[in-house]
Image (cartoon, rainbow, N blue to C red; front, top):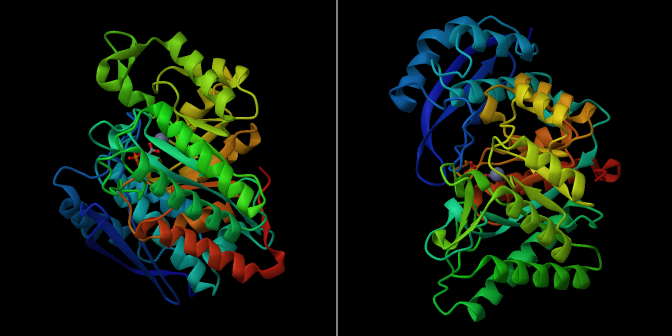
Length: 414
Ligand code: PGA
Ligand code: ZN
């Protein structure tokens, strides 16, 4: 059979930050798949461990010595069997023996190899004939928090969401224009602005949170008017990185302003109302399910999304569902390790009415698999940058998928 695995090849490559990462080739009798792993900077505490002790080199050794011999001869069509074999080889709950990024790359490369063995694109293989909906791109335009330096905003990301676009190409165009307009506005606003970008290609400037909201709102409104469809925006607060456990407060403005959880809730509600925010990610630290639930109840027409809160982990999501915390979830496959684990979380989220937002990581490669996963798993939003090579790789792949689908292509329901 053409989908039987013949070989696995592991190598060290680099991500867009120049950090070492792992890349895997899966060779089947009649096909081939390749995937490389991303890396986060503002990571959730409940994420799997990326690499075994010894880093990427040790991970490669694990592939050669332990994983390749076990997987050779298996059928790449059976993704769950491949992924449970990875769990068995590892034997821990957080992939600390083989590394979560090792599991991720093997898992994704296997799915790609299976699709390729059948002459299909990944989104067709995983999503079937009816997978024809394109996600809206949630594009990071302006950066702060752990993704920036100096006097940048405390909020980690300001993201455009062109939810009125009728095609993916239109939506991606809107985000590119918002990004460009923001760059021009920052030149006027910040005399020290030197055109610097975060790893995700978002601008970094010496402006306050308030100014960032204003710049973002204006750019989205102008682009919306020019293109004649609605272009909203949202934020990723990444609040765990602002959280001071001992003081039970969130630190703003280099610690000169602090907000306790109740004040944080009020601040979030105020910003949602004032700027009609379409999206708020991690507005509270990752263990505060209760505040998430409170905001979800009170915020109107806004996706309240958990990233560090859930870490793509089905057990954490189950807790969120029980408490009604958040109404959207970030899906980063390498937070949990394998495609099957992520698919279980997506299925549970969708069954319970959560919007799935498939996402890049700040350290990423030109691997474009999340473009296919968005369409295959019916995720209505894809979070990625607007410019920068690793982001463009994903956006361009979605443009290709839309082109490939022709008049069958539709935008997702959001
Ligand atoms: P990371 O952060 O990829 O650096 O972890 C991005 C995010 O918080 O969404
Ligand atoms: Zn986040």
